[in-house]
Picture 1 (spheres, rainbow over the protein chains, first blue to last red):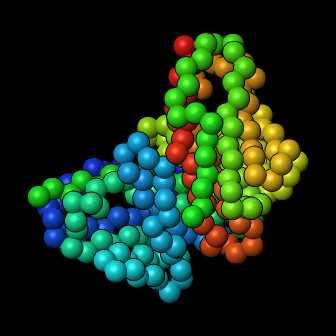
Picture 2 (picture 1 turned 135 degrees about the horizontal axis):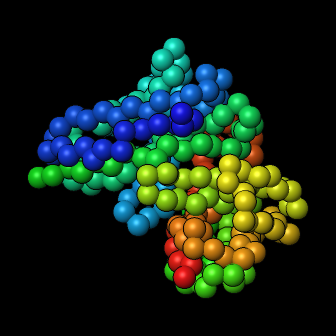
Picture 3 (picture 1 turned 180 degrees about the vertical axis):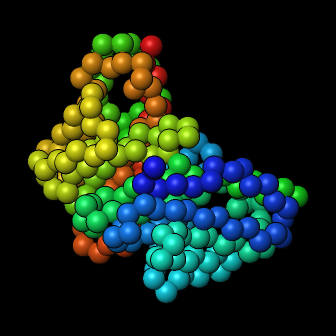
Length: 112
Length: 114
């Protein structure tokens, strides 16, 4: 089993839709969690960190469910510009504060 | 603005060649990382460094080595390139300290080994 797993998608949604992605992780002692966004042929960039209490930034909401070992990303009122691949990242207990393990990404395509 | 730069965007090498990929960051970050990214496999950590001259193996170090002689520079070396090392290589850096410190990525080097 992979340490961090994501549904590869693609998720094809119309503008204005609400879409949610999940990311499961295998090590229950994982320390910290992130969502990164990667545009086609570009480098990943941090979208948001995922705190125990959840995190909201405008149309984006991230949640952590430690009991079921997954993190989620909710995007409300989808825009064309949200089309990208969303990578989740987990800081494993063996990695100190430095190392991240990434999922393979979930591709989102928002259409008019 | 944080900047991580990589020496080449595209590189084509022949099997058996020695390949150097360079990464430079300008934010005085302690941590630097080399990943490779392949379709369906995502980002996999090759090596990372948390200080000058310090290095640690990531998840897939075989066939690679690294060098960190200066804080701002982290080099990835393919001693004898093979076709299965054809991939996108991404360098990243982060500040030491908080567990929520962001990793900043360079634009990537797409390496093709023929």
